[in-house]
Length: 280
Image 1 (spheres, rainbow, N blue to C red):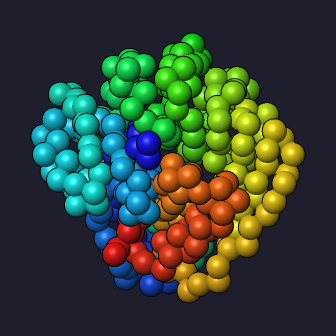
Image 2: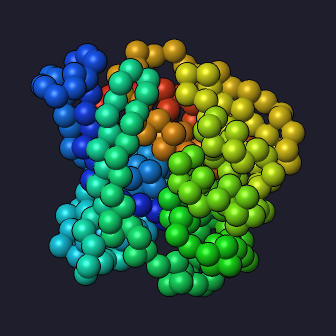
């Protein structure tokens, strides 16, 4: 069984790449691109691109369900979208300055995503479940722990990307660590790893951008992986590409270290184009 379930945010991304330093109170020439994004939806697209059969669950404004469903279908992802009658589809402005990104986020309808509809019978259809950390914010510890139990009780392996240092701090670092404790795979970047360490999960894979990735098993660092050297244009979505490739390879039965090595190559490919989804 190679089916992968991805749960998380759907975001309309507006990506801004200035020609140079942003000038206050006047114009700065920039390349501006609008795409459908969201960490989890990007990851789902990359997982499908890497050969997994992917189902995505998220929540959008009611007027956008057909548009977003068709967008997912164009990447080979089956979307089962919930809708909000009171909130618009989430939106995000990404300001790219070299290797750095600043993000202004309105999560919108994503806040109305319900996890209660996902029962054990449904979850048992999947070998891996991937949950974006953004989906956890605003939920109680009991709700999160109950979801983790249901996924693992159904026989699936659960991977979580913590999502955002800012949101983790707002949520409460210790509360977040307690809520996700026992998850199978945690996928933090370096900044998130500094907050969370290896206490939460059985396997922790730390993504470090151009410095590659580190693998920890039961809290012990067992391997490091170099990143491919490429001409990076836009770092947006590199972590999502890494996660999508990783989970797709694991779901297909690829050994963990090989799956991580493949994922670093996919992440390198992602940063050579504008936008956070596969280009071909």
